[in-house]
Image (tube, rainbow, N blue to C red; front, side, top):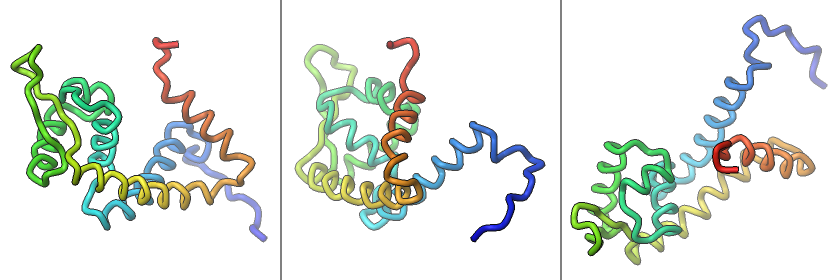
Length: 150
């Protein structure tokens, strides 16, 4: 049985910002550990999943969806094209844009990534009782919604 709690002079154990950041780090570490086996970063997984859900979107549109900055998006896209995981095309309505879609290899890898991320998420959720998991997801969803888009 754990002893009495030590006082926290830093105040970090009651800081929403710190606790959310730390929880995010723990979740990222768990996902990264599993995704590393597939040679995919968590942000690459985010991009692959976003392209799969929105085939044909441009890099600019994917920046808005994923919150990945433009220069990182351009480099990630280039690397994923080289790996044969995504395909680029030029939409007829805008010759300056680049539309993206997953290649068949990208779809296969994404399926493996989803399984890997689920393993990582289950490790994180195991820290929370089953009765609190639904509440956790409800709170996280509420926190990540754009208040301007009610």
